[in-house]
Image (cartoon, rainbow, N blue to C red):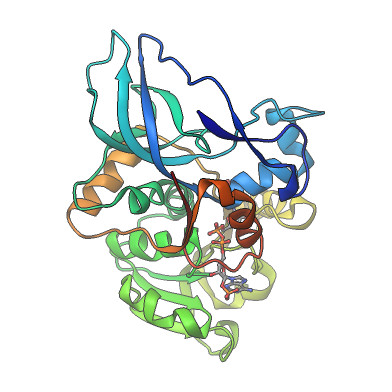
Length: 317
Ligand SMILES: NC(=O)c1ccc[n+]([C@@H]2O[C@H](COP(=O)([O-])OP(=O)(O)OC[C@H]3O[C@@H](n4cnc5c(N)ncnc54)[C@H](OP(=O)(O)O)[C@@H]3O)[C@@H](O)[C@H]2O)c1
């Protein structure tokens, strides 16, 4: 099968397409023939080892997981003897730690994998899980969202487009901040109000929020704390300069009446099933910016690294 390998950390150019043996599922695994996957910011971060600490998990000197790719949608090609949930021919979608930039992948039955909603294409289904998993992790850092005012900064990214829909689903009053060209998109995702960050600075308009979620790692607690209500929470996706978000999270637990929190992505089967339900009831959709064939993974990666994609970038197989 074809798969995209990297043997060292570095720029997108370390990626190369190779032919390798197709994996064989163990007793508790399914073999998925991948029809679509994505290139996301985590793939890029793991490949570049932008945060050195990631090497403690992925290999100190060189990557142990040589094939990137987390999100996938495809068809079950074979099942292990102990598998009961899936059968050959089932259409599935899900997410895994690595290995999805390939034609086939094995996943255990209990992994974050579910039957694909019939209404969704493989391309859309591949783009569901990663942004939503981080958005869920971040939104869960705030107490109940029902009836609360939530501002989502960076609402046009993969995490942002997921966060707008999920916050809305949890009953929040959502204000989404993005650039001019994406205002209509985020409105269509359910934002009650939109702010164009090229025209208005939400920290200066006198409005206050129960939750400010920086979904793109471009804002800071310092700059927006006056826009947080007493008892409010600032949630970040990124550790920030010198990892100060963690320090602030600890500090604000004891000092002051506004909290800082950081979401850490956790992929679970429960969340994939939850998202599937939202998709089936029309309450969630994946936003796709560009599609590339697998062999154009380099170009796709370079585009993701501009940090200007709208929603998700899909690789098709
Ligand atoms: N904590 C974790 O476990 C974890 C895991 C993965 C990723 N992350 C982080 O999660 C964040 C979001 O990832 P993502 O994939 O959603 O990002 P993304 O899709 O690459 O975000 C791109 C979007 O953000 C918008 N944007 C860029 N600069 C902006 C600014 N200054 N103000 C407002 N919007 C801006 C872009 O639109 P315009 O530039 O055109 O406005 C574009 O639509 C990243 O910072 C990433 O590092 C964290």
